[in-house]
Image 1 (tube, rainbow, N blue to C red):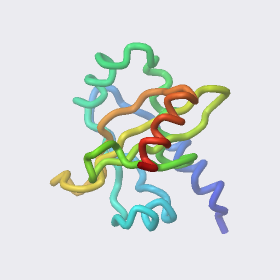
Image 2 (image 1 turned 135 degrees about the horizontal axis):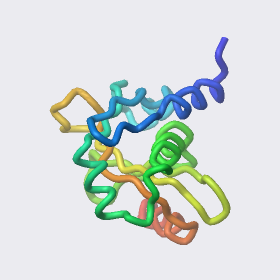
Image 3 (image 1 turned 180 degrees about the vertical axis):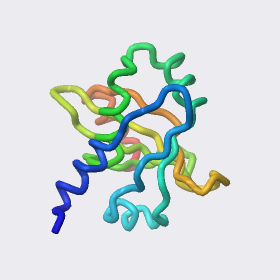
Image 4 (image 1 turned 30 degrees about the vertical axis):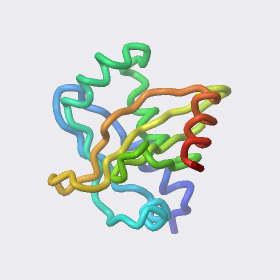
Length: 137
């Protein structure tokens, strides 16, 4: 029997972003789906989002994309609403000292049959605390 930790690690290890096309990633963890009350669907990272991310977050080295997305989606420290936009959630994972991976996921109204990644990058602990504080309001 596969343990929960092993299942999460298998999903993280399966991430291998192709920068030249859309990417279909594993669905979220069962407990996260239940927490958000959403159905299980694969996750899509569109090539257009990869290109947008390269332009908007040049501080993130493309060799870090697999690690950021994998840890945030499949080993989240916290899942927070993505601002005022209800069908969006920030999946955030602690990946080091003052270093956190964040992936914004659209979970409704995608018309594609997938949960869709909208953005991904790194934030420090101060930015994480600010997001947690805003979510409590």
